[in-house]
Length: 334
Image (tube, rainbow, N blue to C red; front, side):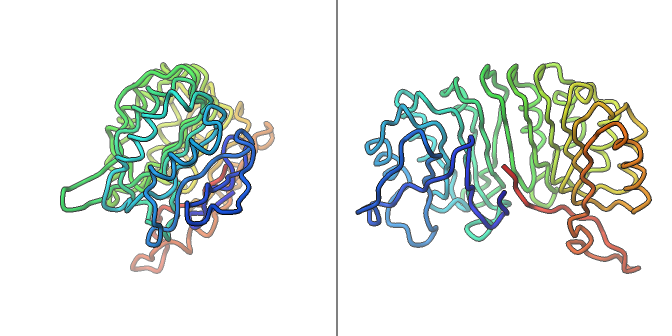
């Protein structure tokens, strides 16, 4: 478990290990290459070495073919630039990183750079260059500089090995949702998308999720998370008739603005009693509605997480002093 203020502690079941900067490397004994998830990323303001140079030292110091998991931390100034040098380094190393199975792109805390300000790029060339990759996660916002916008892009792609895809964002654009939904991902078992808010670039709509909700290109998907959304009532309503739901073991609609309206639509739709878990934590449900959800699902053996997680404490108040639903960025769990 980590929060938005902590770095990953593990990836692909391996403990995270930060490869030392050159100035700090003396006397440090490196672990076995395939025993850790290697992390490259330093303090935004004090590092004296470029990300790509540290990456080259890592590849020279260990047997790069045995690197199984790689965590991409802060590069230069992620608020003002796309990660071009990171992309160039990773694409250039594909013949050396033949054992790479898991990649997390953007292990950047809120203190280092708010998620809404993290610039990104088209990440699909990484998937195309690493056909054996089983897990891919990216953390992205929308960053501005003098040259304009640096948003995440995810055009349609086919990848036959990917089992887990996670996109964490303060605001996902519709073209990203459509790109994921139009991709051929026959091995994908877990899909997690943080939809976010319009004020942070999240212009996606329910219609943009059609490719995902149909399940046509996701035959092995068993866990679907559509989280951190300000349109969570609409998302919950869409689940009522989404064909993909029948195939799921886990449905996660947490960290959003879910109210009784959305929960009512969810309960009124297709049966959910086949699920192993329904995660609705961080919600704005009344206690009677929480009890209705429990009564509907728990007797069938469904694990239900209805923890409000201080949602009301995060919210603004309307003119009557009532909480106005708002989304939460965090916690992150791996």
